[in-house]
Length: 320
Image (cartoon, rainbow, N blue to C red; front, side, top):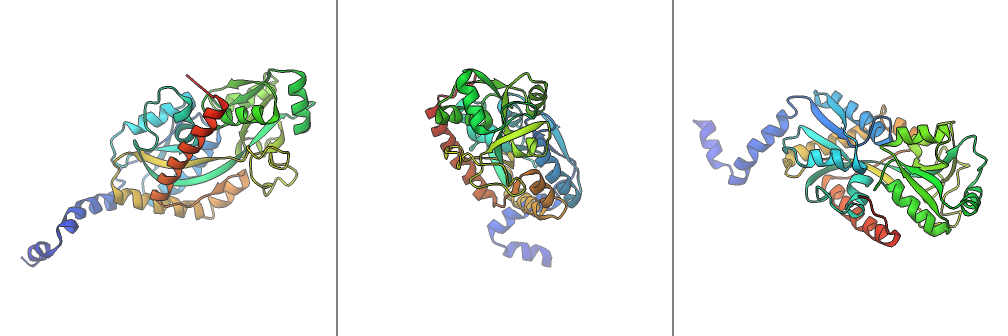
């Protein structure tokens, strides 16, 4: 009786919030799917596995990685956009699928802002221009000279509509060169072909190429030289300030995800990024952990869509 009277005295808003809070406290009751919209082995996959492993340990249910590659990350992202907002499926949202893609593809199957609940930004990684370690190209100046001597020199990216694709177009315009874009279905096949000598160069993330002795790094898209790579020049100091851009990765669910789950998961992601088993490993690979609230990350994604729309229009980038 006393319990019933106490409930009757609660504000209506508190009564409505109680079931939602209870669901958040009980969540997750079963394994959670984390869709990586690129093949295994790339930067998106590396960041996802490091953070997901920690989330599984703290939340008591495994966060299971599911690679769904295709169309610059939009295939796997679309799967999540159309899933129930019950906290059981998330996507590693990223610059390709949620920043550049909306302006590159003529027909996007989702709205990268409206159709998702953006939970947390996880990491940012600069990109690098790299060649085969056996290439006669030993510097960025050599690369530009080779491109001018041989218009159409091939430069690979992990896919149409990715940020690497966009950065290549910016580089062409800034350096006054002509190169041929060669898109792949992810970073693994791209790096294998560069190693085999089937393409001349690639633009990829520092995580993927930075510690790999098969490649020679020519320049990085960071604003300043990156700790751990003191001899790697930035595009800024080489006279190309347009090429300051990081590849970013976050965690997002379908639109309508209950706010208590969003808030709780954001806190768990931020804790994972600061954990001594996660943070140093991210930094060692060239990634920088980032901390944002869910509303801040949502605003960040919206700003990135606008930023890359301007870049794509100016460069005339288009992917089918």
